[in-house]
Amino acid sequence: MWAQTLSGPFRFEQVELAAPDPAQLTPRQVLLATRAGAICGSDLPNFRGGLWPHPAAADGWGATRAPGFPLHEIVGEVVASRHPDHAPGDLVVGWASMFDGIAELVVTDGDGLAGYDTALPTTTAVMLQPLACVLYAVEQLGDITGKSVAVLGQGPIGLLFSHVLKARGAARVTGVDPVDRTDVASVFGVDDVVTARAERWAGRLSDADRPSVVVEAVGHQISTLQPALDAVAFGGQVFYFGVPDDPIYPFDMMTFLRKNLTLRSGVALERRRVLADADRYLAAHPELRDGYVTHVHPVSDVQAAFATALAPRPGQLKISIDMT
Image 1 (spheres, rainbow, N blue to C red):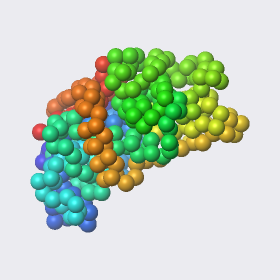
Image 2: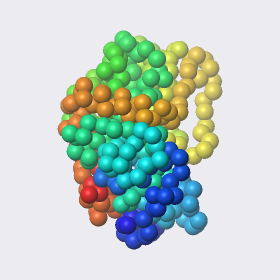
Image 3: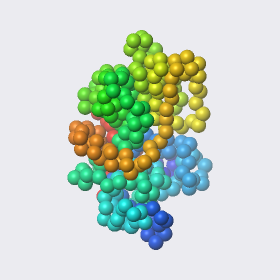
C-alpha cells in the first residue's frame, strides 16, 4: 500500500509498504481504506519538525517518519472490523487514533468512528470530526443562553466555536483574529469581527464590554491565555481549547483569583456520540457544508496542502485531502 511520510521538516515523500493484516486487528479495532482527510492545527507542528513525537518516533529531529503521520481527521470505508458497530463496506468519519491517516489503509480505534450522511462528499464530511470536538467542548460550558462570548482565533476551529455558541443561544459572539474574517462572519454567527491580536483587543475592553465566556482556540504558543483571562468578565469562564506545544504555561493566578474565574479544558470524549451529534448539527445548518472546506488537494500534493495550512489568509479555512 502507499503512504505519505515525513522525510524531514516541511517534506513529505510517498513510500510503499506492506498492508496491515486484518487478522492482526485487536478487539474494537477497524481497518479503513481512507477516502479523505483534513489538516488540523495540531498536525502542523509535526510538519515543521516540532516537538510532538509519535509513539513510533525513533529519530532526532522532533517529529517522526512513521508512515501516514501526521493526520487524524479521516473519512474511510471499513475493510475489516473487530468492532461490533462497524462492518465491512461502512463509510465512517472520525479519528485515526495513531495520527497516521495519510495512507491507503489505516488501523484505528472503532470507538472513534461513526457513520454519517453519505450524501456528503468525503472531502466535506471530514469536517464532522472537528465539529464533534467543538460540540463536546461547548457542552462543558453549560447553558450560555443570553451570554456574551468571545472566541480567540477564527481559523477553522474558532469559526466552528463561533457558530455553535451562537446556535446554542449566545447573545453576542465576538471573533478575534489577526486575519480578517469579515467575509465569513455572518455564515459563522460572528456579530463583532475584531481583526487584531488578542492582547490588543483585551487591553481596550471596558468592564461593560467584557464577555462572560472566552474560548481560546489558537494554541501552540503561550501568549493567548493571558488575554483570555484579562478579557473575560468577573465570574466568567475561559475554555482553553487550543492545543499546547509547551507542557507548562505561565499563569496569572492573581487575575484568575481576583476575578473569580473558571478555567476549563479537555479533549473530546464519547467520540461516537458526538460524531453523530455533529452529523445532525450539519444537517440542521447546511450553510456550513459549502463554507467550511475551502481547499481540496489530492494526496499526491499533500506537502503543498500542509504548506498552505501554515499560512492562514482571508478566504482560506479548512483544507481537505482527497485520498481516492
